[in-house]
Image: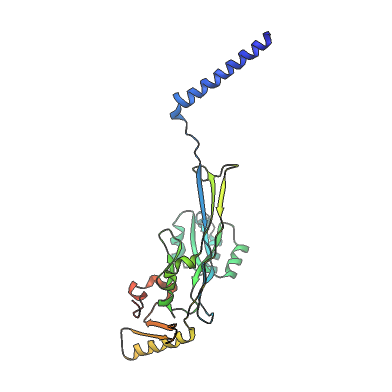
Amino acid sequence: MTIVKLVFLLFIIAFGFIMHRLFVIQVLSSDNYIPIQKFVTVTKDLSLRGEIFDRNNTPLAVNTQEYTVYGNTDKLRKEYNIRRQLQSLLKIKDSTMSAILDKKQWQKIKSGISSDTKDTIKRYFPTYINIEDEWVRAYPEGSMSAQVLGFVGRDDIGNPRGYVGVEGYFEQELRGLPSVSERESDLRGVSFIGGASDGSSGRAGMSLKLTIDRNLQKIVEDRLYKGVEQFDAKQGCAIIMEPYTGKIRAIGCVPSFSPEKYYEYKDADFTNGLIS
C-alpha cells in the first residue's frame, strides 16, 4: 500500500511540474516563443502552349526549345582560363563579360545557344557554369501574317502571354492549364514530414487551325510591299475572302512587324488597318 501511495504521489508531482511548465510557457513567457505555423506552398508548372497552323497545316506559330547559360560570377572571376574559353565558345565580347562579372552570384551569360554548344559546356566545363532550357515561341514565316497572329510576350510576373491577334484573342485556349502542386510547409518553404499535399495535373494548350492559306498570304504581302514602295504609300492593305463561306484566305497590311522582336516596334505597328 505504501508503494502505491508513493507512485501516486510521484505521478501527482510530475503532473504538477508539467502543468507549471505549460503555464510558464503559454502565459508568463508567451512573448519569448514563436508558435509553429503551417503554410501552404503552391507550385505552378506552365503547360506547353498550343501551336497555330494555316488551313493546310503549315506551321505559323510553334514552340522551340532554347538554352540559356548561367554562371557563378564569383568563381568565374578567379578562373581566367575557364572564363576565356567560355567567351570564345559563346562569342562574348570582353566588355559584355566584364559587365556580367560586376554582378554577384549566378548571372545569365547568354541565351539562345545551340544544342551542340549546350552539350560541349556540360561535358567540358565545371558545374558552376549551368544551363537551363525553356520553351519559347517561334514564327517560321517571320513577319508574314504577324498582324493576324500577334505575338507572345511576358506578363507582369514574367510568364508567357499572348498579345493582339490570334495569340491574344485565344490566350486562354492556347496556354492551357498549368499543373499545380500544394504542400504544407513552414515559413521558409520547407515541407513538413508527413504534411498534407495535394495538386492537379495540367493540360497542354489547344492548337488552332486557321482559314488562312500560307501561299496566298505570302503572295498578298509581297504584292503589297511592292505597291507601297512603287507609289511611296504609307500603308497598303488587302484581303482575300471566299464569297460563299466568308472564310478569310489572306489578310494583311504592310508595313508589319516581326513577332519575335515585337519589343522593337510601336503599338501602332501591331494594328491591322482592315479590322481596327
